[in-house]
Length: 151
Picture 1 (tube, helix red, strand yellow):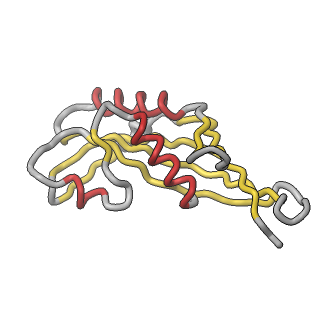
Picture 2 (spheres, rainbow, N blue to C red):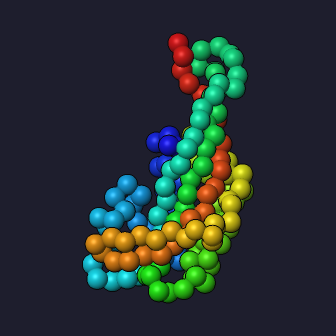
C-alpha cells in the first residue's frame, strides 16, 4: 500500500483538480455513495509500493525512494454502457500522467511516470446495497523520494 503521505497528497490533488464527477472517500467508499441516486463517481485505491534506500549520507541527509502505484477508479450506474467510464478513465489518465505533486512547500514531490490504459477485458462491477455500479480503473505508477532522520 502507498504511504500515508502519498495517499493523502494524491487525494488532495484529486480534490483540487477533478471536477467531472463527485469524488468518494477512498477509505469508506461504499458508506458514502448512499442514497437512491445513481450518479457517476470516482475514487482511488493505493496499490502496492516498495521502499529502498537510494543514498548513503550523514544523519538527516539519507534518502529513500518509494516506488508504487495507485488505481483511480471511475464508476457509472450499471447498464450505462462502456463509453462513459472509458471517457472518465481517459480524463483521469490525463489528470495524473507525468504530473509532479506535493502536499506543500518543502514536502517531498510525488512523480507520476505514467497511467496505464484501463483494462477493458475484465471490467470492474460493484454490487453494493446503495446500487449497482460498473467502472474501469487506471493504474498510475509513481516514485517519491524521502529524507529520513536516522540520528
